[in-house]
Every structure is written in structure tokens, then in C-alpha cells.
Image (tube, rainbow, N blue to C red; front, top):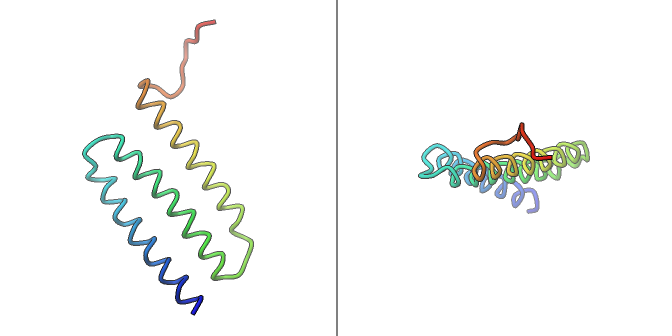
Length: 94
């Protein structure tokens, strides 16, 4: 029963990822695309966690942590780019 619930949740998250990819391609604005990209990262973390439970291993926990860090850094970089138009500021006021 538990395995069936895990497989069902994998299917639901995969469907959600597919819909988010469609939103990423067709998004009416750049912030919509940024949000869908962030949500795809969160779905990827969820899929990896469920696969880790299904396979009964701790090997994917480092991957989950790395994906979380990369998703956060990517979201911050996109938000800064949308706000200021550049990610790395070359001339800083000292």
C-alpha cells in the first residue's frame, strides 16, 4: 500500500513538472517563467526524495541538499536580474 502511494505521488509530481515546463515555455512574462523554474527545482527535490524512500537508501540525501542550494542560488540570481538588470555588479561605490 505504501509503495503504491509513493508511486502515485511520483506520478503526480511528474505531471506537475510537465505542466510547469509548459508554463516555462509559454509563460506570459519573465517572472512567471522564473517562478516555474523555481517550482521545477522543488519538484526535482521531491522526486529525488521519494525515489530515495522507494529504494530505501540514504545515498540521495547529498543530492537533495545540493539541488536545494542550487535552486535557492538560481532564484536569488533571477530575482536580482529582474530587479536590477545585472547579476554581478562590476562598479561598486566604495
